[in-house]
Image 1 (cartoon, protein in one colour):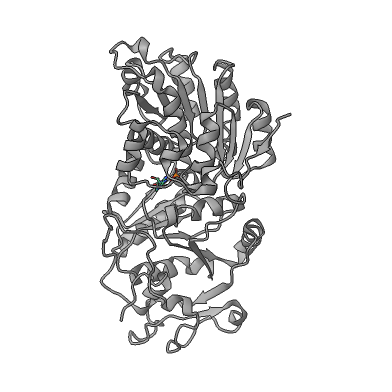
Image 2 (cartoon, rainbow, N blue to C red):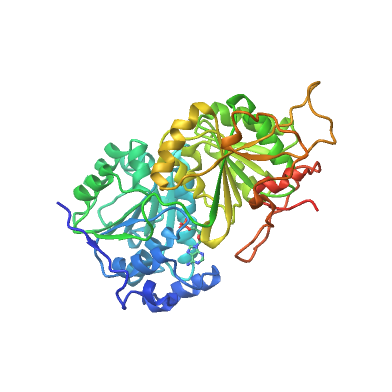
Amino acid sequence: MTETAIFDDHDSKNPAFQNLGFDSLGLAPELLKALTESGYTTPTPIQAQAIPVALAGGDLMAGAQTGTGKTAAFALPLLQKLLPLANTSASPAKHPVRALILTPTRELAIQVEESVKAYAKHTPLRSLVVYGGVDIKTQTPHLKTGVEVLVATPGRLLDHIEQKTLQLNQVQILVLDEADRMLDMGFMPDLKRILALLPKQRQNLMFSATFSNDIKKLADDFLTKPQLIEVARSNATNDNVTQKVYQVAQSDKEALLIQLLKATDSKQVLIFTKTKITASRLSRSLEREGIAADAIHGDKTQQERIKALDAFKSGTVAVLVATDVAARGLDIDQLPMVINYEIPSAPEDYVHRIGRTGRAGALGIAISFVSPEEDKYMVEIEKLIKRQITKEIIAIEKPGPRSRPSSHKTSHVVSSQDAATTKRLPPKKKNIDPWFDKPYEAVIEKKDAITRSISKNKAPIAALLGGLRLNK
Ligand code: AMP
């Protein structure tokens, strides 16, 4: 059995309690310099708690949602521990893999390695990412030059091991990132094979957004007396994210979405669908409506996914439609809005999805389109997040002969109590939810704000998008 200890949040030695800077964590100057350059001033709660434990050398089981800064929470101590072995030798033998970071998806692997590289930029430590979906031969030469930190998805790692292009016998630190997702995605057999190839003497750091029984079993099997750290209630949703639920028939969802998107004048919107087919179909429909959109899902090649993600990050594409698996781990700076076009049947996915917004202290909005058939999923979600979200109905302006005159463009929000009687509202009433009339409040400084006009056709419904910009 695993013995777990809860890290004492009120321990006066705990930097999280004292709200001190990164230098209080005993990190090396090379790492502190990189953090300053990344614009980080204060450790996030997971960093303040996990870094000292990981530096002390023990195993760790950390419950942290995405967007909490968990990558730096494991990457910084890992780099610090490898620093005494860092060298500038050209010999590959001097750069064996000493830290292995496993992630469930390629996108997460890429992002984690980007972070590792950024934090290690003033050290001679080398890092590399390997993932499936691209020609393995392109990765082999890089592996052969030697890297201390390897970030990998499990399947591709095993391919490299089989091809004997990789040795893991010097691994001192293993990180399992988003371990719950790895189990959900069926990686358990691969994980077992990989773990059997690692030296028994090693430090294990496991990060998971949820602590299911399966995760506890994984911890029991692979961790040694781990310290348990939980920064927020598991399955809690971020308070920075305003959650809205719109009740809408499945057949009306596309019209509602287009209406909402056309009403906003500039933003990045991440839209979730349940299936790859819906993701593709929806992104094509949006494009036909003149909305710059792309889809990201498992049937796309790695190049296509990277291209779509880059276009979204740079603002060339304003709307990205994604399935859960493809979107896992996406870190898009200051993403203001997530729309659940379809409600996930696994309630944890809801938490992961809306965790894409409201990151690092920014405000965000998560809108869910719930059809009557999906009510049952919403019930489970509300149980999980221990919160009830009032359902609202928005009048949909349908094109065609039966559409309302263009002067009647205002849409309305009504509470679910009125739902049965009020399917299409007369368009003159004012929004009855004052929330929509609040202006957008940015709580952190905007970096290079990405502003791309989705449509010139701004309607008062813009306020529905979190008051992103009101048409005055
Ligand atoms: P993560 O949960 O690791 O995906 O991190 C979420 C986002 O927070 C990333 O964009 C990080 O660059 C950013 N971040 C992580 N730690 C800090 C920090 N201490 N201060 C400011 N931003 C941070």
